[in-house]
Image (cartoon, rainbow, N blue to C red; front, side, top):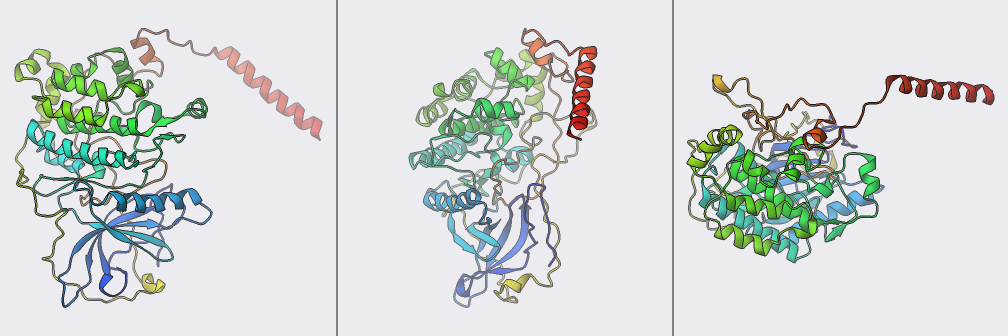
Length: 473
């Protein structure tokens, strides 16, 4: 067996398990194809083994590297992922969880296979949500229902993003998945948990100083989910988010904190949608809207978009976004709700059992590296007029890899093509020096260190080291 390290954060190797069987007897399942891999595992399409009385059923299997006994925190996280997903599985907008298996090296989470893929693909590639108020509203209200039910059960997701929301093939249902970073604590001492693009300001931790400042603080995990929902909705409406992280080091987020209507200056959203976003993206966590109120606001909203006349009047970046994120021909059209959740396929040919259940089942298997599904590394053919435009802050660009305890989404999509988006026009040069955002906000720019003083200080430190070594000798 060839062991592989798939990620620089991965402390233990993982092999390509394609074609292998898990389980025993009637519960045997064959792993068919790796959909993606990350720091601690991979996701496979799978199918139940042939049975003369039952047709084969397709599943998605999330394979996790078993936590080491010396890592009790990760072991507890894996236990909680199974427990929380199982607890919420009955909800119509949570992907059905069928159970977990384990062997010496891996834990296998068996879920419904959702051939429709994830919300990320729907936004970045299919673009069927563009200008479709009714469809956006219907799907987003389902997401709210799932998250609100989780909160009512004291389960806070902390990794909400389009990648972790699956969509039925007829676009009538969405399913929340991946509870790998969930917690039952409504207030947590842990910061920097989740995907950076969707983290709230208090969650963004970049430096040791940030961590020291938060040693005595608590993070409202309910508010973190509301913040992430706002950026998910913004993706659904506009195909992008306005900043890379909710931190004043990000020039765009800094401008958001200074300009009340910054979002309307950058995105073709209606006044009503802007007010909803402002109530979700509050700088004070205590002022964030609750999900019950949010549902009513979304239901009563007439449209998420500016009128075409408003778009032309504003022009600039707003008009670029309007023209780029527009509907395109797609074979996926909204349909009637399916008869069952996830609708497992039962039409595939049965598979012969050609492997045993021993720990040596990997011996002799030619392992190959499992591709890490890098969200945001997409390629798309562009017209000549767009060839020189670079992408920024789009659903199809930003790397949304999860930090803290890594978790893998049981998605069914392959690597997507890169989508290059038109460059923004903020009225400023984005190739700014580190202090420029403060200057843009009207704040004094820190003075650079004097070269002479810096050299003198460095020389003194070197002299002290030399003297210290001589004294020690």
